[in-house]
Length: 337
Ligand SMILES: Cc1cc2nc3c(=O)[nH]c(=O)nc-3n(C[C@H](O)[C@H](O)[C@H](O)COP(=O)(O)O)c2cc1C
Image (cartoon, rainbow, N blue to C red; front, side, top):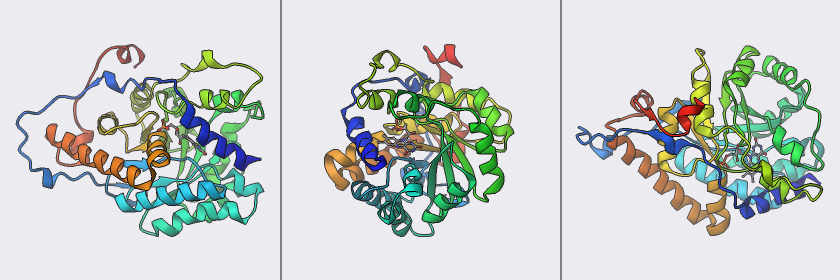
């Protein structure tokens, strides 16, 4: 059953040990020894999907569909409301085939966040237009994420094997729903070429969700006993490379950075590289599951405080100024962009 798989994803994520590299460490930001600023006046707010958010952070798609995942969604939405940041729910495919309980585990997110906050739906690239409309309705979503998870499906014993027609499917969704469509990966990255194809069918928001954090090949390998997929653990486009390469497209494409975002430096570097907002999944989930709501709250308090410290150390008083900062690329990242 799908709800058991969702539970296993969380349990297996917490068991994963392989550590990939986002290559954000190869991005160098210059220190400003003489910032003419007061920490109190640093403003990390911005606008996303037509609403004001306090920090350029997105609690990214993870879960929903059962009572356990309802509790996780409840805690994540309290955090999203507390920090006034957007939140995406996990894949809602489960509600298309399941009962009312599954719907409640998603509805709770909008109930807690309220109308001033941002809630984003989530379905796979195989979803129909009607399914997308239903998923949006359930949480009264501000936008819908469509996830591309080919690598995950292929390693999943019961996963999809046929990926033909996904782009036509996404085009139908873009053309027939009246909310923004965000196409995202789940940790293997979106290349410049794929981003351009998505732009050409009308997609204007892409979450590059790159390599270096949650590794769904490892997560599924822990569930799959037919083959050992360990040799594929290093597969994927590192987050920094995916972001820089997609940003090179001369188009009005809004990019979301995610995949291995763990700390304030990762967030700040992502904004400097051109992201609108920066998605965090696995790291926040680990804080929440290991130490409860208070622990996750402390993590986000520290993260948001340190984002402002870094902005001051760069002499940038708001997100707009931060986005227009210079940066240098070193090491292996230089070869990939
Ligand atoms: C337990 C877990 C469940 C996830 N479920 C979904 C999902 O249902 N839909 C989706 O688009 N992404 C899902 N993701 C992927 C994340 O949204 C994100 O793209 C990926 O984990 C990379 O970010 P991270 O390194 O910060 O975790 C999931 C991630 C985790 C850790």
